[in-house]
Image 1 (cartoon, rainbow, N blue to C red):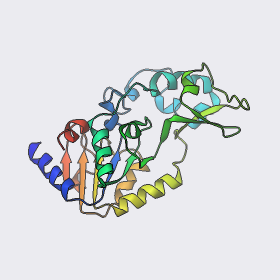
Image 2: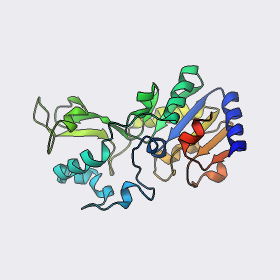
Image 3: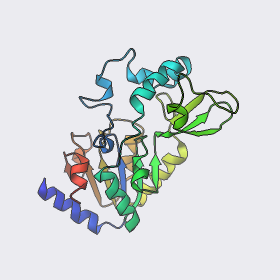
Length: 239
């Protein structure tokens, strides 16, 4: 790993504009469980599969059961940014990084100090009344039982996260594509590159260096200039 780390260091130093695209593996080292690893949520036992619970249809039809799972498994509000989050924020402050594009919904990039964070799947920290559009922070979820309702109109409150069956935000996707096209280096970390359409963003990169940092192999390893099968926090702590 040492030789590849040195190559990654050199590439970062030479790069003028870096874009980072990350997934669940960026947050697992902060104690947030992922979905597809051996220990992930998809491999635990619940009354319904997580894919079913975290769908738009289930939210609309069985909202109380959705929130029982959501409060228990999706809110990790005590988690703190790790070495990867902090290094990315540092690069942005130095003017080397033009954006963090993330599939995560935990807000840890912002907690580390990153300003340009494109959240493809939304955030658990934001919530909206489905009836009047009133905005709420996460305390409306943690401070309530059953189905959280709007104090203004009584409408049902929904987390601003993209559930299964829902579309990604077009403006966020367009900005992600723009940032990727403008970068001369793209670092992909902590993602299996199995979730579409997010994983398809890699095809817009036409820069000089594509680096992949992920514990397991991905379908795009053969297309990358640098590949490290390591935990991203361990790698970024050496950069």
